Length: 192
Image (cartoon, rainbow, N blue to C red; front, side):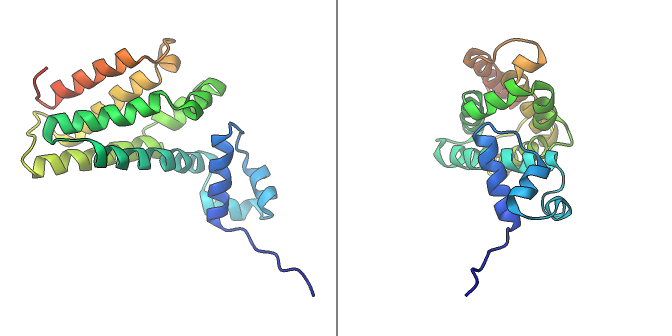
């Protein structure tokens, strides 16, 4: 009787890449395809390129954090939006896998995390827009800015705090993130 071998799937490729990133291993598509015993063309068809795969991996950490923030943050309106913002970004600020990724290859990390074409940046802006729109539709906030612009500014503000070590050589600090929360409150039209 011959032993049946199972074929790798796109989910296997994603899970392995996620595990590699979490453990601080560099993701090389050639090695990943060899490990999964699939052709490189197949892997590219499944995941796109390395940047897209890494964007999906990063989103797989961000999205559950965002959903947790939405479900555990009390209140509504400005306090709710600022609370969600604080929860997400405080957790990101203290994420050891994220800090390691930034330390090991700062320029590449900045590209993956903040480029307007990056998966994580564009999805964070879109997710934030939905949160703002929900609060506007519920009558809990009436921001003085268009929610699309407001979301973009909020995400860029968070990025400037979270990645300040790459952007301007200063270690990210909780105090600076708290200042960003105050700025978001002001952008939302709230009182300080």
